[in-house]
Length: 146
Image 1: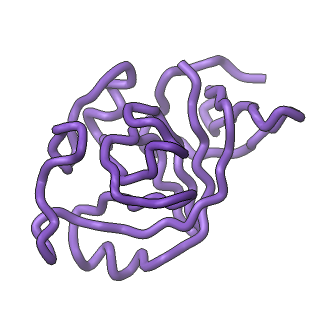
Image 2 (image 1 turned 90 degrees about the vertical axis):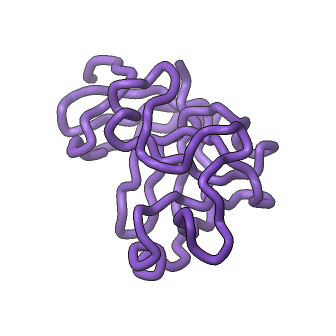
């Protein structure tokens, strides 16, 4: 079944999702690691980057919108801590999330910014060109448990 982990390496890929009748479940990765989630939400995913079209560099929680360090999953977030914007009624601020968008495994992230309404997520990208390439996609966001 795998070993429960609090992070996965950025190149580790999701290979299976097991969902229980209550909507919770666990993610299994190629490494054999597993992560528990309390719910999975189908979302519309878009992308943003700092410094373009008036977008600042600070999130609603005060973190800087770039790859950085934050919270319990420090090891992974140090390498790919990209902070998405969410509706805090859907994903509470500070929540650890695993995001899969159509054609892209965005991976582990933390809800640190607001500005979205409903089941939507705005994913941080390093450049404007990446945002344009990403466009708007359907995705699934897994709300991870500690």
